[in-house]
Length: 228
Image (cartoon, rainbow, N blue to C red; front, side, top):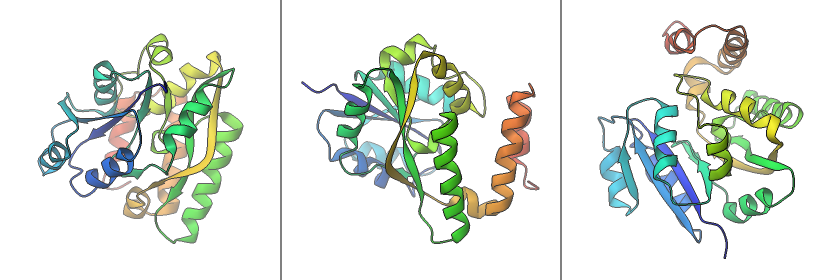
């Protein structure tokens, strides 16, 4: 029998996105969907509960929410999905096939940003090569791994930003992180809000700052600043 996949979706005021994220996950067999809400003030919880899935409440913070969801998951495989991201058809077969290969400890999908801007095509190209060359996919690429491996590396670090980056650094010594060529489709909102070039540069500054040991809380303040 195929291993069950638990899809963990952390949410905070995602009423505009959560239904499509859940629907993109529901067409598959032996899949459990868990929405972990961090204190939404909109209709997120109402929408999620209406779709007959598991909904739990957690302290805010994506790392906290994903760790809470993983603890509640019954599947042997964990898939962490952002609420503004859509999974491709047959995602479950791709995940199970990938994790069955020797030497692979985790995986993620290619990224497609749902807007026609040519600048976003360059972002996608950069994501592809970063993921291949450095085995560093980020959370918007729908990271997946077995629950055993997740517990072995000690869950997502409880930090306010860069939790996906930190998780990849913990996983890399254990084996290969595989990038599936099929993309997930994600919202362009964070690139369009601050500008494609500005967002790309800010993301690189954040990585460098993290590697230099600057506190994730300080980095989060930079990222959230209206001036950035």
